[in-house]
Image 1 (spheres, rainbow, N blue to C red):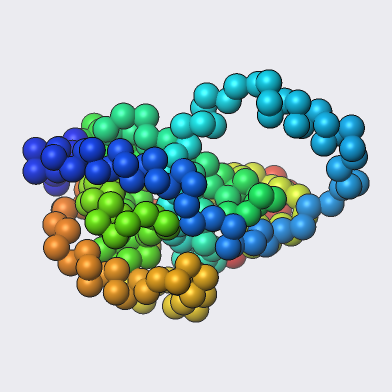
Image 2 (cartoon, rainbow, N blue to C red):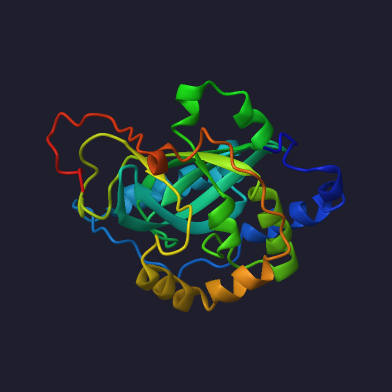
Length: 257
C-alpha cells in the first residue's frame, strides 16, 4: 500500500493547478440537481428574510467560505449496497492530507444537508487502528470508474484532482436519509460506503446524473486510465468482507434496507 502524502513528488508540480481547480469549483456547475425532499413548515416571513439578509451582510462565515471544492458521486448504506443515492459534496481542503465535506441531496438553494465525509491520505489511513479502518471506504473505483466527478472545472484540472483523490479514503455519515425521509431527518446517523467494483452501482442512477451534468462517465473512465491504481489497504471497505457496522436505531428498523 502506498503511504505517500496526497501529493507524491510526481504530483507536486500539479499543486498550482489543483489550487485553481478548487477556486473554479466555488462558482461552477450548480443549480441543476433538485432536492428530493419537501420539508414542512410555514412560509418564510418578510421579517425572517430581513434578518437573514442582515446576517448575510454583517456576519462572517470563515468555515463555510472554505467550502471551495464541489464533488458529485454515489453512496450506499453500509450493509445494504442496493440502497443507493447521489451525493453532492462541498469540501474544504484543510491541508495536503485532510479534506472535510458537507453532503447535500442536490445543488440547489434548498438542497437538504444529508451528512458529512472526511477524506484522508493513504499515509494517514495506514496509521489508524484496525477497528477504525473498518469505518472507511477507498476511493479507487469511484475515481477510476468515472463515478466521482468535479463538475464545472476544465478536464485537465479535474484529472489532476482525481489523481489526488484516488490515493485517499473516506468516512461518511448520513444524518438525513432523504431516500426515505421526505420531510424531516429521522432516526440515527447511518454509515455510508462507496462502490468498489463494476456492476455495483445502479446504471440508471449514473445515467440520470450524467445527463443532468452533460457528461459521460464511461468516457471519463477512459480518460482516467492513465491514473495509477494504488493498492487498497485491506482494512478499508470492510463491508465487502462481510463486516457490517451501523448504529442501532432505537426508532426501529426502518433504515435497514
